[in-house]
Image 1 (cartoon, rainbow, N blue to C red):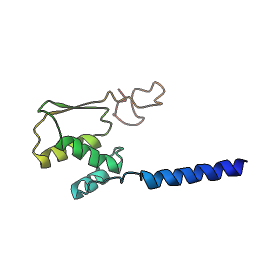
Image 2: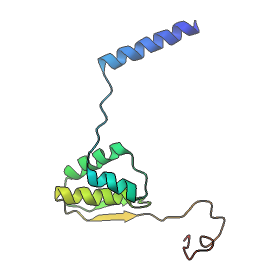
Image 3: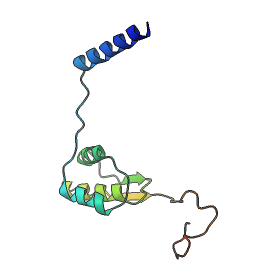
Amino acid sequence: MNLLRQLTARALRKGARLIDPPQEIRYLKDEYLTWLSFANAGMLESGSRYLIDYAIKHLPSEAPILESGSFCGLSANVITHLKRIHGVRNPLFTSDKWQFENVNGRPQIPNSPVRFS
């Protein structure tokens, strides 16, 4: 019975993909952004470039852009680059109260003047 259930589920999934195939993931090809991702630490999925580019192109007004949680600044630099190439003049504000995890109450990185606060 379990095998029949698995085969039925597999057939239904295949049928669903034929009726409504998954959307193609779009990527933005930009040599500057490729090099930026090597030089600037951060976490940004490659498909996010396309989404940020789409959002910048379709901004409804000249209101400021707010990025919450900027971490190392990679996405802020991507937004700034895409604003520049699309001629968008909206100001960009970023915010991130960065607090490094697991510092165990230490005020700074050992043997360094870099503070955790």
